[in-house]
Image (cartoon, rainbow, N blue to C red; front, side):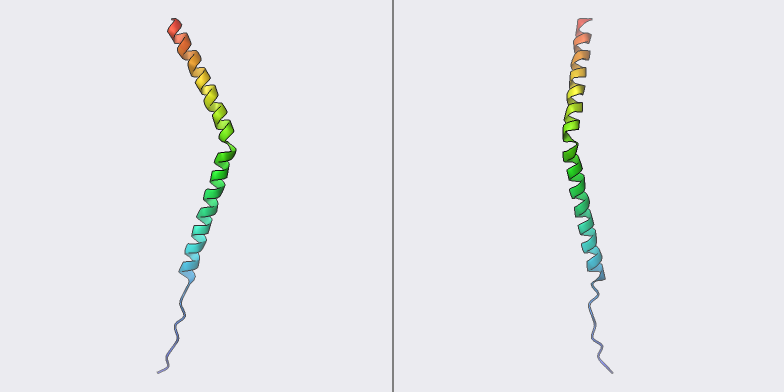
Length: 62
């Protein structure tokens, strides 16, 4: 009988590493998009707050 040397199969490790890298890149891109649109979100929140004040002030007058 001959002894066969078994080579380790690293394919699962490579797939897991690729998945981790992909998820990391996705999170970084998503985070930068959130930072990019933060001023717009603040402006919309401010406009919504001002509109609510007008509605509440008009409601109190009647």
